Length: 216
Image (cartoon, rainbow, N blue to C red; front, side, top):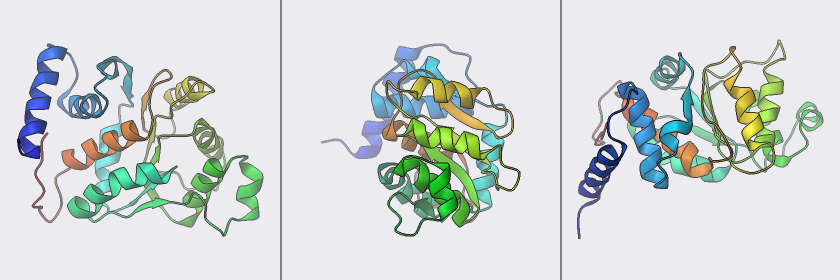
């Protein structure tokens, strides 16, 4: 049996060999490679898109110790171990919160969307991560139009599905008010969202050092 680090290094080698030459900057490639490793789907080399300020926003949010907000608990669980160990970040998900403001209930029709909006109003958010529900991404995009809402530094929007997944991500791709990372088309999901964030967490060097291995 091989050790986990050895398996990951060999997996990355295979990915690099099969993708071959590409024009992606190193930081983008680290995210793309991590997503391919998670999904075994090489189409993500073409589907992932990055706002020009995405990595600067991610680095600022992580170094400032700001919260990560997720739409569903599966995404939170995929991010939390590395976020806590490497950077001491809090990862929040408010899906199913018993206390929900009337304003949030009026703004969103689904539990996932309401949970996300509740999270934005609970405290400052550095990185907002949507891996499951297009309705949550739509609610977030609508919320960004409100003048009194504190915006996250970075939005990672990769919901999956056949109903409004591709369209909501296209809408995210077209905004200029907040940096984003997305995957165009129907593909995405919780594992993709967690992979993107974990790649960013590994890319940013911890302020106080770490014992965690970095496979960038």
